[in-house]
Length: 407
Image 1: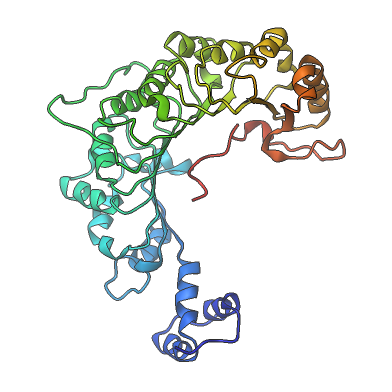
Image 2: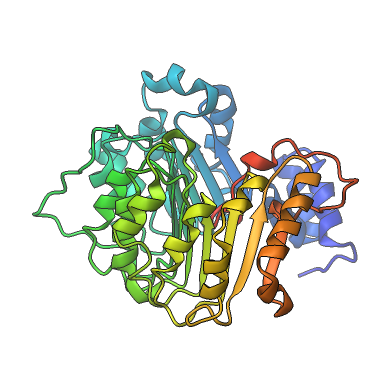
């Protein structure tokens, strides 16, 4: 094979600016066979099939047309049945995925690593399309579901069982009916989770889905990282039950108990009453976001002797006054927190409130600071220089980074 003296990046730029004609590509391939493959892998790493037909149809042809050479290069496939501002507009329309999935060359998507489905109501798919979707789910390492239907929990369990190579699972945005506190799962079916699954990330208001996961067999064998976001009072007991079920295998727990829709119903209290972190006897890292007044109650339930770090996030700098400083200082002086780091993350548009909060935290926990075990940072890793301009969206950013959005 001929080797080019030009960097592959430059070769890719040349290919990208040429017409994608068979003759042109053939000539380029004679000069350097690496050009075409490198350009393809860079151009089509991520393929988004959106809800808008004119944006979707041409891209769909890339992975459905028999003559297309693109399928082997797609690593991240996004399929949006509905979403964003057009969600309600398209809810009543026919499922384009019902027509598209049977045409997709599933067997040729050999590099598919990340599958993202948005607005796909799993319960409404036809049997044929469901089988095709199950085939599509067998290869990806990461599977993400958004807005997949209020009554799709059984279909979700069946889908999970088919994700044989999945290591990371994310689901969010379902917004279940508050009155639907339970889910009917057929006793006749036996549900399992993929043997390689080690990371689970679930959004808030998904208590039926959380309850459904409790029906899975062997759910504890490999899961070591869990992240629950936007936990409301309905979710809290199910989160506690899942953590109890995961048991000692979980090493990192992220809990965002900051669902502002239901602050009158304190999820922290319900979470603790349901068992909280009692069953997480192997946890090493705890990331919490919520009301500082309840931090002590949550941490007092921890029995793991392996604790390395506790991170607490808040969007209200003045709320650090709610820390039970003496009790927390005593807690971090004895087992199991005797050698653990305590990190305080605060999000605010302006820097000065953060500087004031930092001084308060340093004064509260002098012993931890002297031992080098206390950290105070601006959320997102942003600088705390007073000259830093305001960051308007910072208080609304995710308290802790997503586990799946950067594969």
